[in-house]
Length: 369
Ligand SMILES: O=P(O)(O)OC[C@H]1O[C@H](O[C@H]2O[C@H](CO)[C@@H](O)[C@H](O)[C@H]2O)[C@H](O)[C@@H](O)[C@@H]1O
Image (cartoon, rainbow, N blue to C red; front, side, top):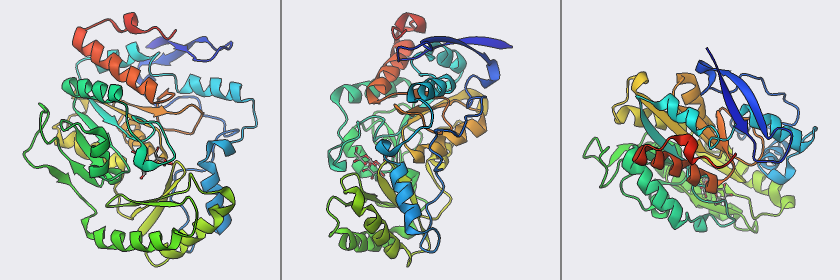
């Protein structure tokens, strides 16, 4: 059967309202149309070259690719955005279809933190979420089991979010904790639910100290200890120093083949080489919540970063629920939908609350068209 979905773009253009034909089964899947590689960031989320592999230039290219100012498109950026929006429509405009697809299923919410609940800022220690966002997430958790899935360590992200009723999967899912109080969805008295990388703790501590020492002479570089993983931030490092910084990180990691390097938004992330990521954390949490049956659950994952792609991919592969990428610019993604920024994430979460609380027909809520 074929349905028609109204896609309304944010931007003033001929694409403002487009009727797209989508089949029932493809509505919540990754887009059917294969994206042209022209103008897309082609640096994939694969691991960065380790000590042996890839020259220093490869590293710097990868660092550049994570900076929006370096993003270059061969086609007009407006056309590019419009075509991307057709394949990843705004979750606000698709709200009715999303809620319809969830009927008869329990929605479970997975929310990334940085760039999703809080705006990206220069100082990682000051990435606060607004009180309004906190109040919205609190309401959301009353109606739907809700988990924060973050690259930060669980304690740190908890200190930003400060909602005891949520699940937290910190360190890219390597430190999963259940609600400490106030959740009807709490399934067990245990607080720590899963820590698959415990044996790496001494190594991570050692590398943290070495990286602090090695990078202290690079102005603007910041090393963050996320317990089971580390972040080396280069957002505030002058571009001409990126190569030097990459070289320093590389020289430290060459002695630790059991650690791998991945990349986030202007950050190099160091983590154990275990087969565990945000996608695995989502699967673990769904099982912990008792949703082993594919037909009774509708997971929704919202995130902005490359590490969130592991979770989007899991949902796409399971053919379950949907992923929403938070981005203002076109990016290669496994997510089906998009939201432009944290303020839109808040609107979407509020729509879910209103829909559940007041049973309001979603179209009455949508004013974005
Ligand atoms: O999975 P997340 O919750 O998105 O965590 C990923 C990284 O987020 C933080 O860094 C990012 O946000 C900072 C504050 O806005 C920004 O300065 C930085 O450039 C971003 O990469 C966090 O500090 C990292 O440790 C996380 O790995």
